Amino acid sequence: MPLTSPETIVNITPQAYVLGLSALAAGFTMLTGIGVSMSQGLATRSALESIARQPEAKSDLQQTLFIGLAMQETSIIFPLIIALVLTMMNPFIGMM
Image 1 (spheres, helix red, strand yellow):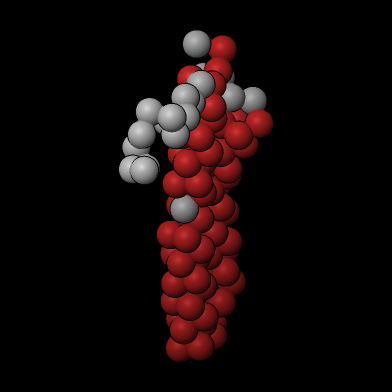
Image 2 (cartoon, rainbow, N blue to C red):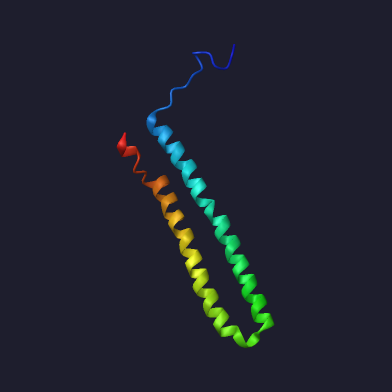
């Protein structure tokens, strides 16, 4: 018996389809965390190398580093919020 016989076809409801695609989109959205964590690591490494070369510039480098890390951290909070909205309170279900 072939796998695509009419008896084995499962009907997927539109709500299940939207929920599945929303979960997939939430997963892709959270992949931005990989790029943000890599850039934070590179920024921290560069700041530590600069402090090792010029210890007298430590306070300026720390201030700049913390501002940069805070800005990078906010760029991961927005995808987190989008992923939570898509998985917990999906607005697309009400559109059907």
